[in-house]
Image 1: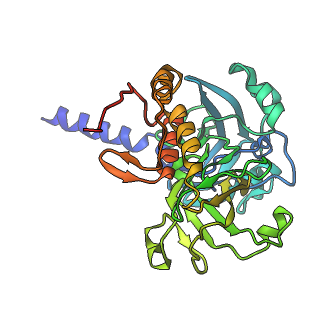
Image 2: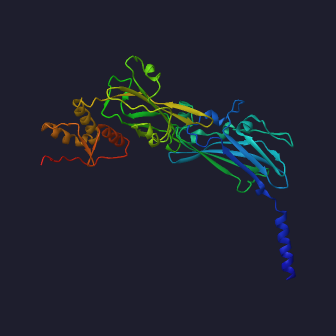
Image 3: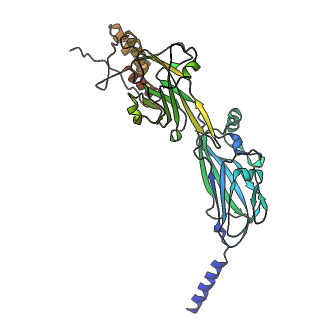
Length: 391
């Protein structure tokens, strides 16, 4: 029993004498974790006084003893299923006082202005060229040179505190992730055609669907939509855009909506309506554009779509319906079903303007919406058949 007590005492003494490595804590926080565009300059591989701040570091020592440490930052990229470390940087060694806490920025680390007040030691993080290897991922360096931005992929920033003897402090490595998509485009789909084209597309409703495509990450999508009426005296596009919009929709989180019947329907729209909603009118021409502010590592980049235009068709001009409906059906059915349409036309049939979809009467614009969903891969056409409904 006495021997057991002695062994227990020795065991407790050994625990008390063990160094308390786990009491150094380091936490990296990205300034803008929702960033989708990451200019290469933000990585700041070359120290610069103009370096932006794209992360902060909370550094703590909760132990009653001081440690000599350095910080190690590793940047990895996962792209096309390949995960590689593309850069590594570290600070100089410095003394971390007992029972201390400091908050530093990436800019301070880059410029050497991060200072431990008690000792006056400067902390500077440098990326040695030997620790930057963009060739580990095929084509990465070429993409960077071509665009000036980090190519799309999943970037992880892993920061750890290293003891002077080279050992890690347990459970202190932080993994912070940026999913970079590098969106570059916002493209209107319906209604209308670009103003650069001579064709002015008619739509057969005053409540058309508006839809656009963008490679912005849907999780962070944010769109502003502007719709303008073209007045008879307008000559240029800028003339049209100088008028107050008939509908201004901001912070839309979806890439489609149907034009509202009145201001009372504003709550049905996927964003915030600014100003009044004016109804569309038959026989008038309208221009519209979509804009999106995309987050970068340190700010925002504005993406602007082409300007589309369309004319609300006078419903008495039904002769225009036949060619539009045939054009949409031809695209919806695809070349493999071209024979179905040809057979109908050879027998003297043509669209009369009445369209039924899944048992209900719809307007021509819904065919265009259906076409856009097929073009985006949301729907597929398995087969096409004709039916005799004359009896």
